[in-house]
Amino acid sequence: MSLPDIAALPGVHPFYLKALATRFNVVALNELTDSSDDTALATRVVGLASSGESKVPATLLARFPALKIVSVFGVGYDGVDLAAARERGIAVTHTPGVLTDDVADMAMALMLAVARGVPRADQHVRAGKWPSGGLPLGRKVSGARLGIVGLGRIGQAIAQRARGFDMSIAYTARTEKSQSGFTYYPDPKALAAAVDFLVVITPGGAGTRHLIDAEVLKQLGPDGYLINVARGSVVDEVALVTALQSRTIAGAGLDVFESEPKVPVALWHMDHVVLTPHIASGTVQTRESMAELAFNNMLAAVEGRPVLTMVPELQDGNH
Image (cartoon, rainbow, N blue to C red; front, side, top):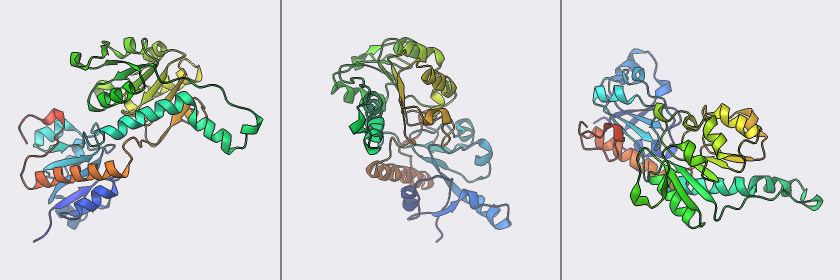
């Protein structure tokens, strides 16, 4: 008996591909051609394996008439056309929960790195400059005021860690979460004006595009730091570069960018910015857990069972 056919988009993690290969015939999407054999194969594909950065438009979904699921390896899924998936009855799943700790850890790491100038200090020592003098003083993190844009699973995990640093915690979200015990602000602009560190951890997509704009950065002010572990699209990158160049804000720690893997050249040489290549969930343990969850979602859909982690927009009982 032949194995079910799955198409894998470019950039899918090797751990995920390895798991899929145990139960499916996995073909690389970019290797499918217009030949009669590949066209016939496309009609048999029942699942798409994608990453959180993959683009899955309606035109791509239309290539696979037997498609049952798009199983995303990642918590973000803003590249998937959910309306087209809903119309076709295609499940779309992601991997929330399993990467919460790593992303929260990374938010704290970026906060500490940029405030205390850790990369700059490392370079100073490696370049042999320590005997010639020290570096400018950093900014204390313990006891500072933290603002969180988005108080979901990861936002709450960041708050939990920040408590260990005796930080005061405030947030903004679509709805007030009175049970959190944290101070609520109705929008990012009001929140930014009240904090020292503004951490962005809200979903991407059209609804949050450039949520952090020039006005928010102005309110954050010359002593404030921006940390983004959400999606690059949530921050107006042009406005951010301008704010950093003019010292409208004190600095930034960025793990995500608008046009990944392209990063604005202007950011490369700023010593008050810490840049990482979208690695917030990048630990062996978490990648293995993400692969397992993405695989189990794929298997469930193909076998006709309920998936484990449908994206919220499609949690209506139709799949």
